[in-house]
Image (cartoon, rainbow, N blue to C red):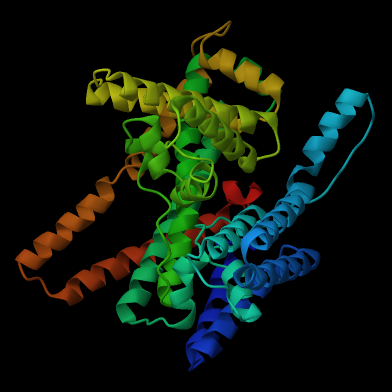
Length: 473
């Protein structure tokens, strides 16, 4: 099930909210959310729901034992729990990749076909963070399996995060408040995310597929088409992923949860490091807190820091997918992070702010080309087109596609910046100064919200289902 489907919008969500708000105690509300989350997850397959129960049980039991243990036993329990979590993730997400490598080396015809459970990458990281935090003493083990299972499978975050630690979520699992404003803000945030996904991201995907196709047709794409297509794909992946985050945060607000933000307009960044401070913030925080800092971070020698960064960025790429292009994508960013660190240590003069921004956009845009193509043959042809090697510059199809969508693309580009958010803040400030009745502002937001929902529903009805891009990770 996806947030951007009619069954979710008109059956699952209304029924869940009706039952939820009829529950009088926090225990009852948690039970409703847990049952709803398990039903939501069961749409991905009952057998994977069983896996979720087992993984939650393992994490819950290890958490209690790690808290009770001391000294060497505590370290052994931590290492064993993390090894189990990573082994399960490895079987479901990376078995095919490693079997393929082994088959190629040994010249065997081995094939493994294991479907990846929804959200396994995200809840595995939650489990690792949980046992690590208990080991470090920054949180206490949860005694209730029911509460821990809810933390792990909460359907708001189950497929794409944000990755929230147990320490961050625990207070709201036991006590949370909601009012009309929070519910209204949540519905509005959800509506914005739904429109961002169905109206903007999905249409960007259609344009990107036409201009930079993930097939042998990429060999005939002219340079201008590859450039425009890569830029459109760059917008699509942000609009799609941030749309899910908007919807998850909105669902949480409706019932009193305050989830962390996952994006801070990353395409306004002025360096690659700045980009990763703004993109998928909770994933970056996970790697920083549970990989980079435990390895020594930047508190060690420059050489060792570089090795730590290499490990982190190789893992970042590999986490995104079990293909070599994702590893290359991660190492690609490692190179630029090291370059920027070197410039800072060397005391080099900062570039003009415009040049910094253009440099960042170029690096990120080219990076998404590596990210898009798992097939090395197609990736090579895409890069040839990107750099104009053996290709014509343009053709009539590219020009017509661009001109027919120019206003849509301009709106998408603006949606990747804080301009609409800032306009909203400006209107609110003006309204307060002129003492406009709050009912007028509420009415305006309601009209916008209803309009976005109707537009989104029309898009869902009129188009085939397009899953969120990050579901595959």
